[in-house]
Image (tube, helix red, strand yellow):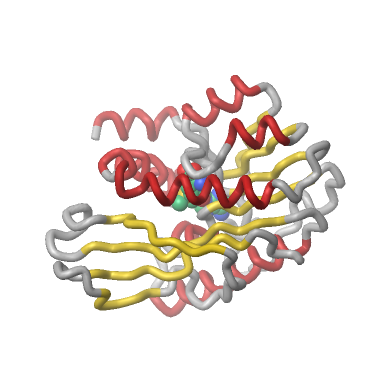
Length: 248
Ligand SMILES: C[S@@+](CC[C@H](N)C(=O)[O-])C[C@H]1O[C@@H](n2cnc3c(N)ncnc32)[C@H](O)[C@@H]1O
């Protein structure tokens, strides 16, 4: 707990990440990952591999734009840094470890930015525009981010409003990704599954609140909360998809 409080103070983030309570969640996720390292390892490795596979289609003389990079656990940062002229990491917050790693690689920068461009004005959600007019962008990856857009935006909203805002943010994110002229990939939770003690799925939820993800080129399961993490009897896993090129 003390460690988390310390990280909360020291983690570079946008003011809205602190105001909204997101920074607390950002810091807590690092502790959750540590507790569930074995259960998360496969998901992180597959995410990194999917991003690198998609990156082969990107222009190596260009910049790789990596969205939702925060802790870079599921981002193949060294490999991207070696493949592209430069790498821009984008998130509401970055761990100090990510900052150190970025500095050590020389061609990686961290940009604090709200990728929805709407968190300050949720009444008017529009497709974002950032980087679309930047001809140096040679590859874009949205990495385990899209379902988090709704979580951050709707923390203090009622269910119906949260569904609407979450869906609109998800659809706007997909439209933004599709508008890039360079290869653009998506790694995303498609479904949340709740399992009972016998391992049977007893409920499924849509983490994207109705935003329609494209068909995946690959799919896997992420044991995000094994039994004991959030409940004694129930566990939670996510069905994750990788779409190699969203803007074919
Ligand atoms: C589940 S984490 C993804 C894991 C991350 N790729 C990693 O390697 O640790 C989702 C990330 O999305 C970021 N995020 C959520 N909403 C965002 C927004 N509106 N703009 C930018 N980043 C956002 C969070 O801060 C978090 O780092």
